[in-house]
Length: 302
Image (cartoon, rainbow, N blue to C red):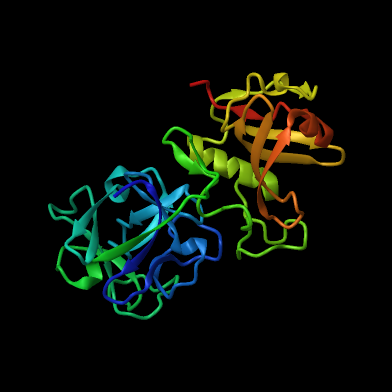
């Protein structure tokens, strides 16, 4: 299975692998079957080892290893090789199996669905219809999964330690960084959060997805903009930039730079937590922003 963003459907019931959450992931959030709805809770990023929820890629599919929900499937911060690293293998023409790389009590354990109804956040027993859990292989269709790739935007570039597509496929231009995926008209009312809300939270989140740490690399020295390429001379694509406009601070990710200008990826330039990709000449960037602040970070030069 190639790295990328996927929806994952159970062959037995045509329900989607779903994080039971309202736009916010946390340790222990339940994973269930649910009817297709197109939300980030039904999109998963496979990084080559883990299936990370696109609600927040900091969290990944996990086997709960303690009482009272032993072998339940939930999400947890990506820090446990034994209960999180998976092997995705083709199973004939029916789809794929998803198994833990590590053995459980000497046995291989596979992701398994129960029944065909929508699951919920609290019923975590393997006997509960709609729930997802880990079990030994039975070969039935409740352990077979169909993966559908979500293509990266046409303007995406590979960035980060693992060359992920940015803009993120789950957050293309025109989408919203909100808990319900819709525009918000009140400042921060529905904004997602990642150690901050709106543009700051989004820039930190994307930087984390690329580099594994929102403070990776080198802190950028503060500078007043000159309107020339020299403004970005030591700032690499993939940088997290915090700038000052005439009235507000604004954070963004630097996607590209060349001799004429820069392309940035951000949210809330519209005041509604909308995701956007924009290109500026260096002169226009200076017209829009007065400086780059020292709360910005650039990845180490390659």
